[in-house]
Image (cartoon, rainbow, N blue to C red; front, side, top):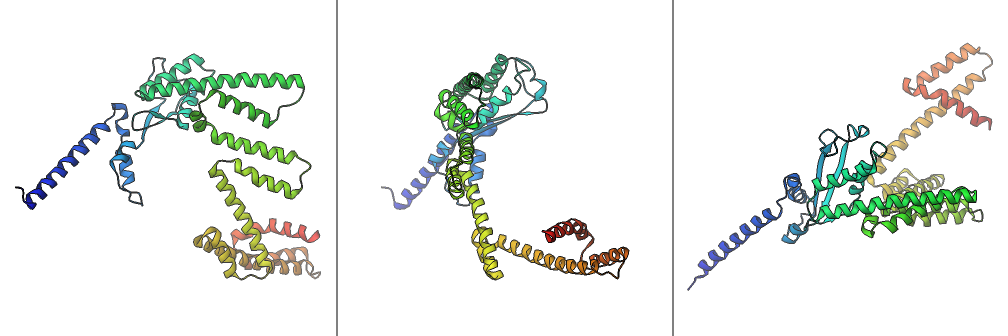
Length: 365
C-alpha cells in the first residue's frame, strides 16, 4: 500500500510533469513563421507581468490572447514583382500592423486601412491595377491563412467602397449643377456615410469609419443649429450640449472636461467677487484638477497678483510724471525709464510698451 508520504511525492511528481507538458505545448502553439516570429506572445506576457493589478496568467488567457504582427518594411527594403515603389513614397515606411486572434483569424483594425491608403497614395504615378496588385502581394507576404484571405476580402470591400464613393460624388455634382445650388456639408456627409455603410461589412465600417462619422455627424449638427434663426441663445447652447452625445466616447469626455474648466473659471470669478479666500479658491480647483494642479494655479495666482501690483504702481507713477508740466519731454522720458528699471527686470520691460498702449486705450473708453 502507498503511504501518505509516498502519495505526496507521487502527486508532486505528477504536478511537475503536467506543468512541463503544458509549457511545452504552449511553446508549440506560439511558434509562428519566420516573418512573424518576433511577434509572438512573449512581449504580451512580459507586459502583463508588469501590470499593477498583478493579474494571474491562466491557460485560458494564454490561448485567447490576440497577437500583434508588426513589420518594418521601408521604401528601401520593399520587395515586389512590380519593382520599387513610386518615387513619392521614397523615405517612407509601410504602416504594417495586423492583429490576429488565437486561431489566426484577422481582427479588423484601422491599421489595415492605413496599409491600403499607403499604397493608394501613389494613385496617378501608377495604375490602380498595379496598386491593388501591390496591396494583395504585400498582404500575402505578411499574413498566413486564414488571416490572408480575410485581409484580401477587406481590400476588396474597401476598393468597392472607393469606387461607389466616386460614383456618388459624381451624381452629387450633377445634381448640384442641375439645381443651381451649392452642396452643403450635411449632404456630403450623408452621401459619404451611405457609401461606407452600403459597401463595407459592419465590422469593417466600425473599425475604419465609425468614430470619424460620429465626429462628422456632430459637425453637421452644429452647422444646422447655427443656421436655425428661431433658437434663443439658451436653446442654442442646450442643443450644442446635446449634439456632443453624437461624438465618440473619448471626444465626449474631452468636451465635458472643457465645460468643467469653463464652469470652474466662471465660479472662481464669482467667488472672488464675493470675497472668497485663497483657501476657498484652492479647494474649488482641487475638486476639478486635483491637489498638485491646484498648487500650480495658486503659485501662478500669486505671481500674477505680484505683477499686477507692480504694474499698477508703475502706471500711477508714470501718469504723475506725464502730467507734470514742470518737466520737459526728455525729462519725462528719463524719469519713466528710471521707474521702469526700478520696478521691472530687463525681460519684463519688453512687455511694457504694449501693455501701456492697451492700458491707455482702456482709459480713453
